[in-house]
Amino acid sequence: MCILFDSFQEWKDYCETNKKPIYEPVLAYEIEQKGKSEEKIWSGLDQAYQVMKEAVQTGLTKEMTSYSGMIKGGAKKVANHPTAVLSPEFQKLVSRALAAKEVNSCMGRVVAAPTAGASGILPGTLVTLQEIHGLDDRTILEGLLIGAGVALILEKRASLAGAVGGCQAETGSAAAMASAAIVYALGGNIDQSFNAVAITIQCMLGLVCDPVAGLVEIPCVVRNASAAAIANSSAQIALADVSPVIPVDECVDAMGEIGNSMEAKYKETAQGGLAATPTGQAISKRVLIQDIEILDDENHQD
Image (cartoon, rainbow, N blue to C red; front, side):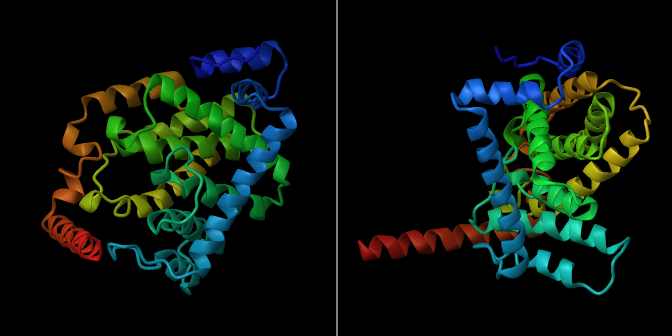
């Protein structure tokens, strides 16, 4: 029998009572939901991780220019810049998160984890983590399962959609998923993994969804990089047994409450924030004119 937990406390209690690793109940849930064998689930996770790695590689090696022109190979520029602000590893983290998200903005192949708008965060964090610490693929795949479990609870108690909860629900959730996976992969216990989720959420609360021209490009791409950095900082804090003070389930509920209170113009409508700036409005009009011209061309061809 699989279990879909209503809270992180339930998840923790189940694992401790049954002496199960943190990823095991999520694996059982996946097996039952998909009606597939355990071997097939691991194979699917491996395939998803390969797509993540390919997205990173594509974003760092191919020409990435979006239809709107707002995305112009930023990841490659960051990766190749001679000055590393903190370390070469941090530069890799940032550029890789940018790279995978740029692939999404340029209509490439990504894993929506948990959404396409946040698709650079898990690739950026996990590929870099694996490289730095020499982790095997199985550990990373177990981390992906843990991230999926985090997302299931966030979806149930708050939201994963920018249209419902703002960007905190998309990049915030992805960062929380990544931070839990990072802590687990580095040998952290259940409390530390869930504390990382709580700390991440605390850092991302209130982030609005204000896509310029209604496209998942600006500020979405750079937010994937900043969220990847927050996931790592939260994991570092949690691994040191620093308490988030506010329990993780209460942090999730706070995220849901803020999302519900947020005005509609800050929830993926492109009517507020950066989308409503003079430059944002000018870009929106230009993109709209391009769309109309394309439609006219198609009509003439017909």
